[in-house]
Length: 220
Ligand SMILES: [Zn+2]
Image (cartoon, rainbow, N blue to C red):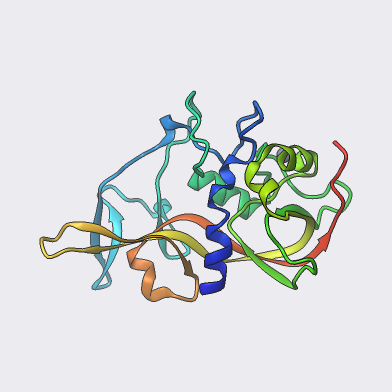
């Protein structure tokens, strides 16, 4: 899963999408939501897998352990970061990264609005991304306020369909003393790479967009 790695990793900092705006984006975490929990390796069917000491089934999705974070938006905004669970929720439910409401087109609800930060002039048939959708009402605001988007050649489009293809995450192993140590940071792990699932702490969902159609920037 090499190609999505480059594109998706470049979008990690899109959490700062409205840095210059007073709005606090839905996918941006607050310091109060950060949870740093000790990780362990447990055995599942005789195979070691990453876990929390008090893990529940809700901590896994797509066969991988997901980074826990609080859900109780506070006061100190961590602009360059992405809230793992809200990013995943945006991806799975087609919610806007800025406001957290539906990013489906009001007139054509089978299509979803998306900003692709750096796409070729001719949109490809499919596109991997870790960046959640942006609703029609917030396209212009996101383009105007985000330095990262202004630097590239962002393409505004609507998307007919998409499917999860992997995650951005960190890989872990045990050292000679049995300590759990991070071995790779923010790499893409494909859903077709199950040999890595037990070592992965997932932080963002990567999806592959299908049926992309360029669109004009909607007038707010
Ligand atoms: Zn929105």
